Image (cartoon, rainbow, N blue to C red):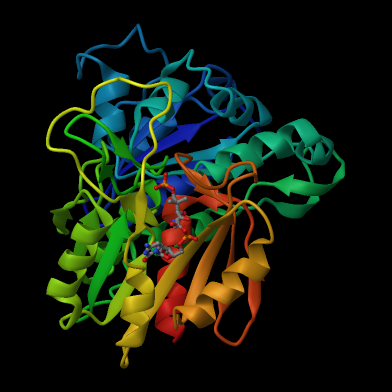
Length: 395
Ligand code: PMT
């Protein structure tokens, strides 16, 4: 599983740094390529030569001292990494990264990487329980950073409590599970809709909403990663379509409906995360509407409710909707589940911090057709995408 994977291991200054030696040796045994970055403080606990010998790679401590192998090392390692692991992770490193501080090789690498980042915290129990640290952890978790919980017991300082770094074998199996790609959507065709729709008033203006497509693109990314054939039918966004999905760009709700219907027979699953306009201008002017009177009255006509139409011809397909509400979240979402004949709905409230349009996170309730409500904590949209796919597999 770990063969030829590039793992960057960040070691920070704590007594648990000695356990990182065992971790490196395990990862190397599993045929991963390990590059170790140490903070200055970590070198007070372990000599870099130890990691160099175990990993057979040069260990980097000072970002300015050793530009021998790469021109800009923090960028090179950040790009090369399939995974970055920080073990042990002190309160200091967690705090710095949570607050965007990049003042050494390790913090700049973590900041510059697009690879998943995992922290294995290790510190005194009072530091671990400190609300400042906990809120930094929560903040990072919400952005998609992962944490391997520390264990409880007698700590190096003599205190007893939580804060012992997870053992190297536990960290190794966590890393292994991250590379174990679920392929549970092989043979399934999924239509995902994303982004806003634009309802043209004239060639210059349109009616739309604040959707950025992040939620839908995250679902498409995860579905294709899990083996599905994915049609991503997307309103205008600035996002790049994930590799492997078939992107079908659309503008209006009617166009979105039409494109869905072209692929509906083939689909096993439809996930409607797009924010579709309920109304469109009755007339789309061919020329720019000129300013004249004080008032301009725009007549709107109802767009098709795509999901409602799909619900009428559901057959044995799985239909998942989203609900964006500003009040009575559960009540309104439940009504949509039954009216649109859905298997479940993912309901988000615009006024909840970290939820809804444009954020990298979402806070949702999943409501099924039996009326069961599952309340989920704030999580990265990518993680939520995986969870939605897990719920579909359960069905
Ligand atoms: O794109 P992001 O910036 O990441 O934001 C994500 C999101 C907020 C857009 C997403 O989480 C979300 O809530 N999407 C659904 C928004 C919405 O249109 O909700 P609604 O309650 O108005 O619609 C209910 C369901 O019916 C939705 O699945 C919608 O796609 C569908 N619908 C709505 C109107 C319509 N005419 N046809 C439809 O099919």
